[in-house]
Length: 111
Length: 117
Image (cartoon, each protein chain N blue to C red):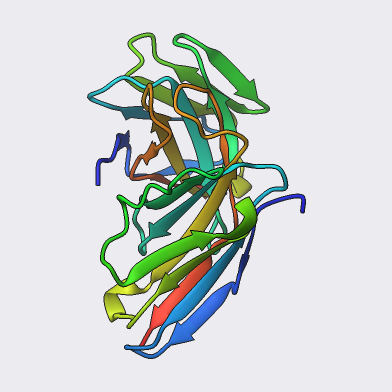
């Protein structure tokens, strides 16, 4: 099925570094969601974005809804070992109820 | 309950057998989604329920897959004559509306890991 382009696919970073990942789509969305999934668990919602240009923070996490409505990014500041996991973006197109998921960014933090 | 629950957490079955996976959504959530996640992959939409409306089954990969939602709450995903390629994590999510045009968020259960031998 249709998927968003999420990058990077994976990244190794040192503890304390900032991390940035993004998702892009060929079509516009009216909702962007960011999830984190730990091994053996279901995705957990981190941040929800509902308006173009919206910038929302959740602790060390910050996400933005791109003004073109075709992209979103997630930043993690001062990474810690427990940030390890797979991060997914999900977008919902106008007039639909389906969410389209990115392919995920696998984050590994080196202590 | 406080969150979406799914059972069983793990299911190992033999090829050709039928399996049933259960999802209990968050109380009061009218929309329910099923997804499939193969190892190392993203989430693949399977089916969507909203209230008493007819479900959107457009993501079901074959007629061996079916799902129902009784009383607008609990949902069961059934896979008949399982094949090895059905092995995956099956995730359920619910949201409070899920109606096209409304902003909404969905919350996931822990998933059922299905292994077909």
